[in-house]
Image 1 (cartoon, rainbow, N blue to C red):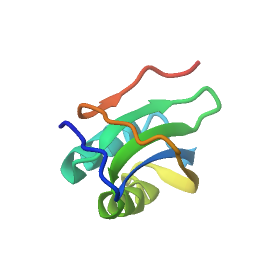
Image 2 (cartoon, one colour):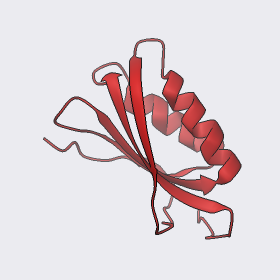
Image 3 (cartoon, helix red, strand yellow):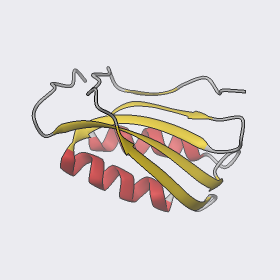
Image 4 (cartoon, one colour):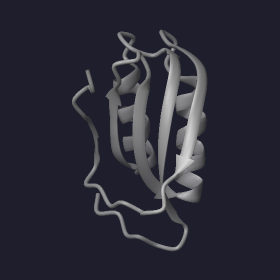
Length: 101
């Protein structure tokens, strides 16, 4: 996917807290992103949270966020901190990035 930086395209950073490591959460996020044509990455953080950066249209991002806030059945999402980044990033696809231990 080569994401164009249109006027309704945005990049967000999401921090997800809860039982989100060791339960397939990153793979779930990648699958959702691929289904929604959202580019970016997901990774585990040393504090037990999961960090996501994602770029898509307003509609794609809204649906993507709603899905990841639910998470897979094996997870429990307690909270999500969502920040819109000033710079719209263009990614080729969506990947699982190395953890930040």
